[in-house]
Image 1 (tube, one colour):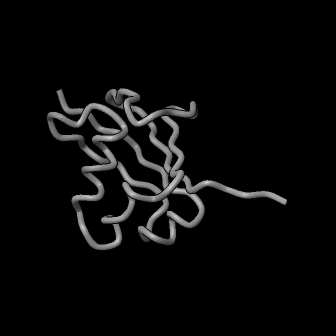
Image 2 (cartoon, rainbow, N blue to C red):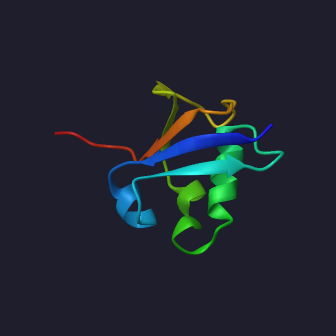
Length: 86
């Protein structure tokens, strides 16, 4: 079965990667947020540092997630940098 997820990029990440969202078919072996980040970083270029952003936040289906949070077909994964307020 093909596992496709929708990825959303917010704030500075949107500018960094040059897009606000994408649909991505996950290859076998990519089953969690950490695996997705590694897959994206493997694209190189503007994607390369994505997995190393300090305090990067992520959500799966609008719920805060962890690197080991599982991914299923049809999930929505959002990445956003930490924000500060004042």
